[in-house]
Length: 406
Image (cartoon, rainbow, N blue to C red):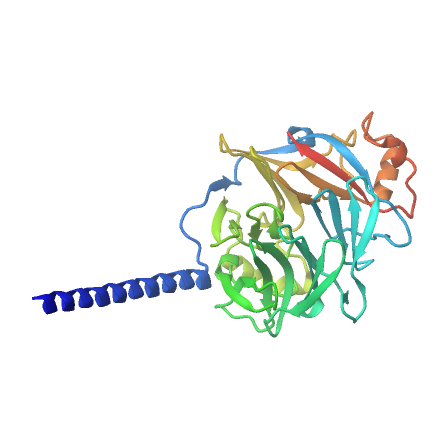
């Protein structure tokens, strides 16, 4: 009897261990499967209908408080031609000029130049053509994306750590985003296929591909290197950051899983058949001319109360959307009018917020636009730092305006 009982216990333990092992295998299978395929689960946090009535204009003051002016120090070591990426962390402004200076600069919140990160060259800690950057706020590190899928890692004080190559041969990496211990990348293959993915999780130490998410079907299969739009990573220091590509109907959240955060609804969203036509006209670079097709979400911002973003309609028409979370109401306007800085209109045709967090948004403009507006007496009375703005010249760096959410 004792022997039988003992045998029963042993068999029971073996069966239990096998069951646990099988459960673990099943769990890992579904976890890896979900991680690899990246198909979005049903349902988004918010659904935003873009087909409602549109106003002709919407003032900045309906979203923001007054403007704060940040005049960047100008000098031989910090000349900026155009700000292509901007992020603000720990009272420092990190600026990438990937087009003219082809370098990264750090200023304090008052605009004083602090240092450069790396330099142009071919040696350790040097880069050829920086395309994007991201900040690991926990470990206080900066990742710079160089051409050839190279990533250079630095401490926030500029100390070089090491470099690695993203292990995705025959591809171009356009944007990188660090979040929760992983580096995410938007990659387009040189030999694209219908089973490709848009979003890749990268080991931040050696560039190895850890997982793939978001099949290209969510971008209607568009994988052309020559036409990528302005979307990709948004709310870059938010927790979690957001992501969208050119023709997606979703804005997704990045984290342990890729989940739909916002679903866009409209009869004018781009469909697969529209892209078949687009393929034929790309040589002239006149996409969607004469249509009302909606594509290319940009200027995405979010506070505790609202979500706002812009999108392109047709060829170059732009609209701004303001969505109030509590009431789920949507307001859309043809123009966002900067009444916090200017008496009328904007500095240029397109409004461009380079960076935003839960507190506010940062907008950049060339000094020539500021000088022209002051000369024409088109700035609001009492504008912050108006005396210093009047001293701008042709050698001055771009000016930053910070707007705090209401």
